Image (cartoon, rainbow, N blue to C red):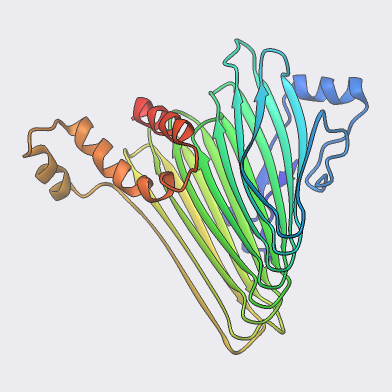
Length: 328
């Protein structure tokens, strides 16, 4: 099946137009038995085994809400759908924590997240993917952001043998804003595919994508970020940046930052870089009495900490870093 398809296709030889995922046999068997379908367009969560609706009414604050999705021993196949609805001038701060129970068998998760931020509202979603190399995940997030509303996604990808995350945001009302802060650590033979597509539809809208991570061993990561200024989105601003730290020669890193524009009076910026840790910096840190491994940990931590600090649960923040530190 195809996933995370670019809105404007490029050369097929580059093999970045979409991601491909072959469903494992145990997932196909589950879908056949339960008479369910699974595809890129199932954003409404048809056939979900887990459903959650989080709604804040006008002027209300929902803070610290946590949803846990655990797959593995009891639920090898988990298909879930979350609806997050912030009414006018309300606020929702939500943690979506996904992990598996480290069983001996493979597990699979298909998650769809729907966010609606009405006028003047604020939605902050902290999505954490903490899984092992027997887990695969397909995740779709779709957000509608209306006038004077703000959506902030905080994301940490630190597990799964194969993880595909797709995020699409429509800035529908004047002065609507979206921020995306994402970190990742991919090691072993893991594969991570990150896809972000932001459509500036109304005037004076704003967007920022900031992705930072590290790759080790024979890991593969693909970043595809698109900011599209639609006709009528004058006075809008958008920026995207992606930085990858390569911890050895065997990794494969792909970055596809895209800016599309149908409007004159807009401002768009994009940047992507990848490279090894500077040897002079490592030498300087090691001259203070640390070994090479400790020096690398300090550098990686310094790059990931700004986003880690945004996780509004101290216990989960600690678990995320401990997981990264243990894999270094």
